[in-house]
Image (tube, rainbow, N blue to C red; front, side):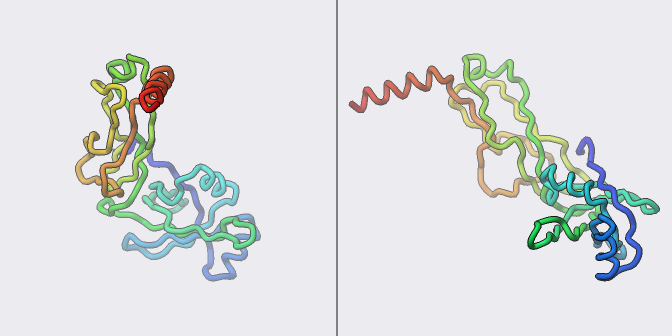
Length: 204
């Protein structure tokens, strides 16, 4: 399970329709709606600066949040859209969808590399080049892995680590349908330069 699902704090918006939304914006709030999950839609407001900080943190549309609204039970949600001002590009409305524990969603899961001290390639001066520090997986909302683990023991210089080398948690699958690269063990710069010179000499 994920170690910590980030909170997303909102407040109930009194009134519905365009008038209430315009009033919220005048008060430096961003209106939103929470729907799905077998419950009635819930109009909410977000503090403007708070929402901007969340958006700037990245992955807002692919992060599972624990929505906290005073007077309401906490619920897991994922953003399904952020409407923006066509001129300034600032957020004007947020759509959030409630998730059941059995719901399937796409999320970016971080990759952790272990046993660097046992990696032959790194011991010989190679460099771990991480191509994907995160991998997008299709997961069940009630059973989200905290991370994916890559065991570097036994990898040599020139080896490539692909998604098939990772044991994925049950019920999860990559959103990309091919054996894509996660990382590789690159040769030391001096060795790589020597190889290039040797290749050029052979060609001449």
